[in-house]
Length: 568
Image 1 (spheres, rainbow, N blue to C red):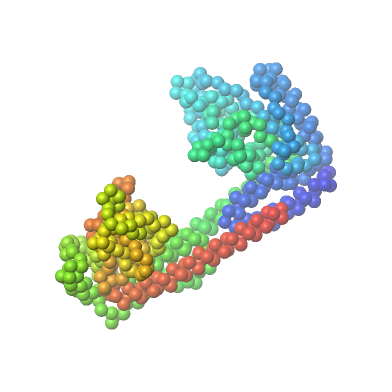
Image 2: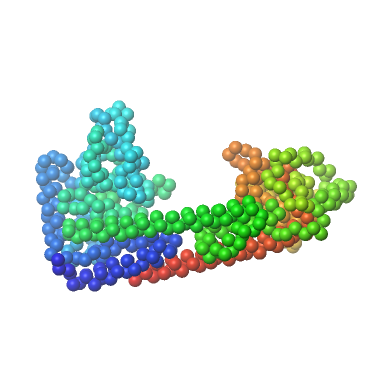
């Protein structure tokens, strides 16, 4: 077989580059998906395999198609197709190799018409498509005529390509590869493409999945939530038609390269699952065994374990869990125990009540054994949240009743995890005698009552005059408890699901005041609270660095892949 001198170097070079850079695609986050797109792009531009000047040109193939079309029309098997407008130069997206032709999809495919089922039939709906394999799965339905859906109308036969024109971004495309008994009838959601005999249905299938055709569909589809392309636009789309023998060579090469992509995806998934499993086992041992051996393993294998953000997120959770279990820093026997803190808190409450600064708190029930999730270190105590902080909801927003002067106030949306979003702060009227009651002061912990209940942040601005709305709790810890420790407890239990036990509501969740007051938390000695928070800050900064390193690495991999693809 003699090759075309004008295309051989380019095609050989492309093939070599693809083979050389599969590893590059493997390393980049979405590299394999981009590699698939590149393979199909090159295939449809005639750059994936060599052209052969001995192949009969596409112009001869089109003559054969025209002859077959006339025979089928004469035999009454298909209807006479409507004439299509000639292709204008401005419609052509790129130049094709010599011997290829631009045609419209309707020029090279036909359908088999429609029928209303009159007997038992095999119904092929969109849900039956395996869009990964491009096949019809086992989810076809055997129906009788009486139960035929109104969409069951389109006739298909072995070799037919079906394309879902509804939500086309899902790429529900398949080839009917076998005889069905009873006869198959497809949904009207499909465009039916039965290639004439001088055309490869797998070449048609690959083109429908190519970036060029996807871009065309995106430019012509209608609708936002439920987009679709109509048959007129679909069948008038351009199609790059090579000689039949080259179609077969292209299909063979595409299938070969896609199989390599499949193998790469499988290998990557196995590696990621193994990495996640090893890390999960190490984290479990870290939480279960207090001897620190798992932490040694994690430190020794940092480079391997922390190449994915999922593992960094799990490390963050483990840090918080170890903190509240009293295993993040060493205990100091010289620290005053938490039992002494509770005595001081009780005395402080009495002074504040006597001074009229807080109301006398309602007594809280004793903590039951079943409420205690784990054993605490010596010197720690289990307490209810309301025991160590004065909590209240903000002011109700009621424009018809509120009087006074407008003041900035915080809403649920302003409070994010560990930070405030202050780009959209509203105003509400407050009377003078309400200002002290609803003022937010440095050190106050603002906690979401609804939305994402328990989401919280510590206010630190001493100059910005700010108040808060009823959608938020303001927790003011007593002097022997830090806001940071309360925030750690809420963050940890919000992440592990423990906090949800205190929420009310079936669909819309709330964290009412009585539930917040009854929330059970561990209380360490005050000096240990400070040591824990300092260690958390240190380790979270390490996690931030890990995330940044992963972003930088994946960015470089993506940049390298893009450069490789540009070279191809």
